[in-house]
Length: 123
Length: 123
DNA sequence: GAAAGCACTTTCCTTTAGGAAACTACCAAG
DNA sequence: CTTGGTAGTTTCCTAAAGGAAAGTGCTTTC
Image (tube, rainbow over all chains, first blue to last red; front, side, top):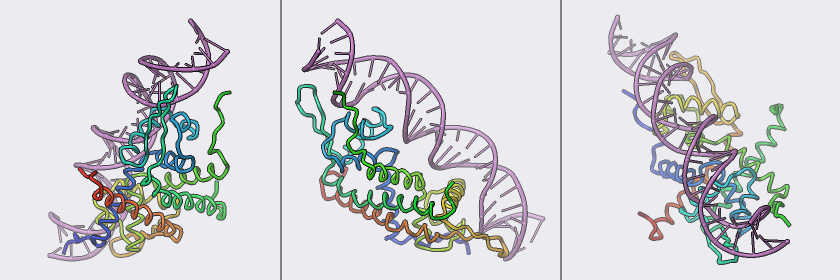
């Protein structure tokens, strides 16, 4: 009898797998978490503000990632009619629900780093 | 006066940003979450088991990702001296601490999908 | 002794991600 | 009328990610 059956192929697992893929495709890339995290901290930031806040990002990436996040309704973009035109980026109500996810990820990273120092693993 | 200062450049934020980068570099790629999730569910799986469990992954990727995870002490690899040689992959104690992270990500993904159906956003 | 299962590795290829630099366009201050 | 700030877009390039297929080596079953 060939092993072709799949063990953890329950509907629950399938849904979870799908959900993980969904989340990670929305938050993929080097910068999305940083952008969202920054917007959760300081609400209402301009393009150049974000460029300064997020160390290392360039204009192309910032622009592209903001568009992605806006399309997925995680970030609001509001053009202000100020003297020199400004744009206000802010997190949406829905985007703010990512806070627990980001917290878990950040906390795990902090704990992981500590665990490396705890063992003789750091090098 | 030039704007050169950075607002969210507090030590706390820097640490969090660092931690997020750490976590995401360890868990980067298309498959790591799926592998870890699968190993948390069904502990002790062989290479071919994982290949069957994780829909779409190929041998090259599975092999490479398992090596990465092993290097980071999230997964154990144990060669059994059975008749046809088998290998048992299992999650480490430390790898298991990723469960809350994965749960948050999965739950957010599920909620996100629901929110798309709730609005007139689905297309 | 051929087929098939286990556990991979290697090669070759395409796609995607991401960065640097230049450019557009508009406005204000000096 | 030049500098500097706003908010981007476009082009060009490299590096990394990832998939398909074939190959390796060993063992057991038919």
